[in-house]
Image 1 (tube, rainbow, N blue to C red):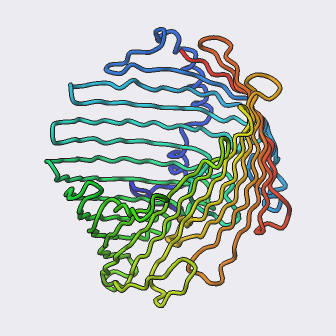
Image 2 (cartoon, rainbow, N blue to C red):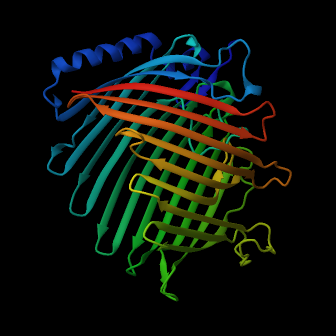
Image 3 (tube, rainbow, N blue to C red):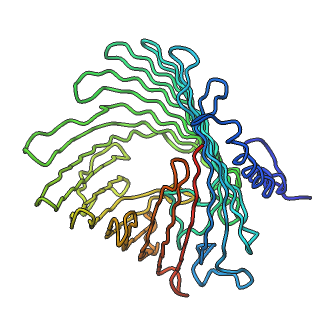
Length: 475
């Protein structure tokens, strides 16, 4: 019996799944090429009229060399596969001006389609595409709207942590939502229905395949100039498509929406906010076993910025949040001891010091610490980052820009005392030059070198040279 995989549309055999993620390799490439060649025949000076839409059209072609096409460390490389390769990528872009169907209803759309064709590594040949449609209709007290989008890219999902760092991760993302907002004087009611789906092409990432539906209903009453009393009901149903595990979470929240200004000092700016949530989370494994809980949350935010001199600027922000998961306060301060380990206390802070060295050169030092969601789980990761950036415009010739950066990052999964901290050091150096050949034709040339080393890899650093030559023609 053949192995099958489940998607939102039902059971799909592996071959069908592959067709779902692919629009037909070479067929799509030729489609992009033909569309680019035919566009001048149907387009006006700047736009193509299609029904209600005035479309702006552009086509492009990239020729590139990538010394590490899989973005892998040496200990991850497959001996049978070539590490570096050339590729070319034709593409076609469409964006629309805002279209009006009725005086109060507007639509807009955008789309991009391209095809990466490698000279030797044909296993990496792939299409990349996205399309988005937005609509909105506005009335004196009621606003209705929504959007739908589909995106297929090879960069994976940002803001997701993968131990050892992520390599190439082609993923198909489908999203959509509809909303309704009604207001009358100080009263506001908001209804939102969201849908999202992620499908990863490579087997090592398919544990993250998921479908999520979120329904939200909120009511606000503006009692104060700085905020509102509110109540929100939110239900999120998440289905992990590979394991078929389903999480059904209902969260009811009430409190103050907005921030209370605390004017104890002229500076820094201090704000305080309070809210309380009622959570009822059920999963396939724990249905009927978990008791709903109240979780009051206090948040204090401090922000400020200083001009230390005419060329040196300092900005900072810090947010401290304490959630009483058992309904009882602990008042644990950042770095202090907590009496109740069930409480969730987070402390996020950012510090940036920048200097304008000359009209063409600047550099900056940034420090940030914050948690982020881990890949394929609900655990949090403590992420601490030190970054130095340097930029120089018009190096040697006009339009040639130079950039360099150094970053040191520490990521530690929270909730597991035995979890190992990943330490990653990254250096990046690059050059970029743009030239406008004519009113419609532009050329972009760029080079970037990246060196990345992680203590999760013992075989050496991940190095990458990337050279891209691009032509863009706007019809």
